[in-house]
Amino acid sequence: MRILVSGGAGYIGSHTTLQLIAAGHDAVIADDFSRSKRSVIPRLEALAARPIEVRVVDLTDRAATDALLESAGFDAVIHFAGLKAVGESVSKPLDYYRVNLGSTLSLLAAMARQGVPSIVFSSSATVYGEHAPVPMEEDFPTSATNPYGWTKVMQEQVLRDAAVADPSLRVALLRYFNPVGAHRSGTIGEDPSGIPNNLMPLLAQVAVGRRDKLLIYGDDYPTPDGTGRRDYLHVEDLAAGHVAALDRIAGSATQVSTWNLGTGTPTSVKEMVDAFSRACGHELSVEVAPRRSGDIAESYADPSRAEAELGWRATRTIDEMCADTWRWQSNNPDGYPV
Ligand code: UDP
Image (cartoon, rainbow, N blue to C red; front, side, top):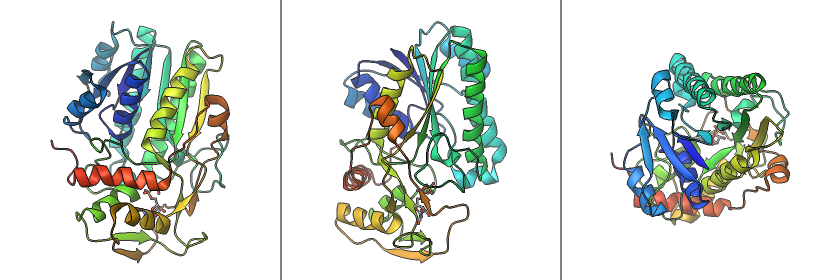
């Protein structure tokens, strides 16, 4: 298939692009490089051992998105592009609604115009909201606690409604739990712009000396060691989930499919700190701080639907996730060059 990968220069998009190429697909990256770096492209080309077509496009621009899809012969879109920093979404909600919803609306309109039948969407376990029991199942109700989360809830709804109106449209809503890790080569990985929000890039930056210590946000949760538990999955497992979903929805009788992508096994903050210390070979400085507002005690998937319907399972261990993150971070202490 010829696939448009929006946000293909980003963390999950770049790993998925490589796996699409390895699976024999033709992947075209569309990215505005507002939160990613151009230097990722030659690295991807080196790993893929072939040139990769890249289009620099702002997907909120309807005319530019139409032009991108026009006569390009795409069979599917994988839509990663978007803003994803929870804290920033609280201070800049309008940017989040404009960019995240706007890009999805332009892509769907352009897809309808060009007759592109399939879209795989980068959703998040954040759509289960604050009060979901664990493990989380796809049929649970959705809600959110911040504008970023609402954009995911709303984008899912837009995609469902578009499918009702167009019986030829096929949609996969992939709800990611906590993606971490990096390609084994250590040449591509997660490079958040500004101060990271997530545990793994923060741990990696402490390990490499870019920050003094990790703050553990709360050790009084109702969990075995008192720290929050999450379902971390290796980005390479996550990328494989996209390839499987794309194959599954093409020509499927089901119009909209929703799949959790997680391991089903939670790991606490303290367990992650210990695992990362083993990976980098030294102790990491930590300090217990108050809970972070909006955090929940536990989030982990029931991944059985993805296993049954996609034949997909996350197989890489926490130690592999930490070792691969460390290889990337220690080879690239400041992330990608410009
Ligand atoms: N966390 C932490 N210190 C940090 C960042 C995160 O203790 O500096 C904790 C956070 O409270 C949560 C877990 O690590 O229990 C994962 O947080 P992250 O932001 O990576 O993922 P999310 O909470 O969005 O699932």
